[in-house]
Length: 72
Image (tube, rainbow, N blue to C red; front, side, top):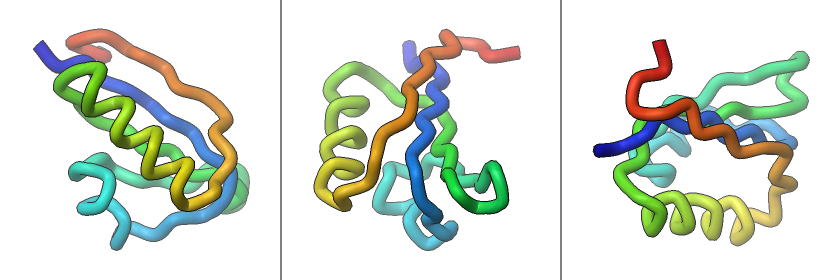
């Protein structure tokens, strides 16, 4: 069962990057100084793939939070 994750990175990515990040939603925090990617990620391999993409963009990873299978 996929878990809901919130990944926060330094910098501003627009919604056009959502597809590249497997359909995760992107939102801006702190006056667009950071971007939060949020959504369901099916497994650890997919999570590592997303983290590799963040690394490949040379963006600073601030946090990764697993909110579980049902974040509400």
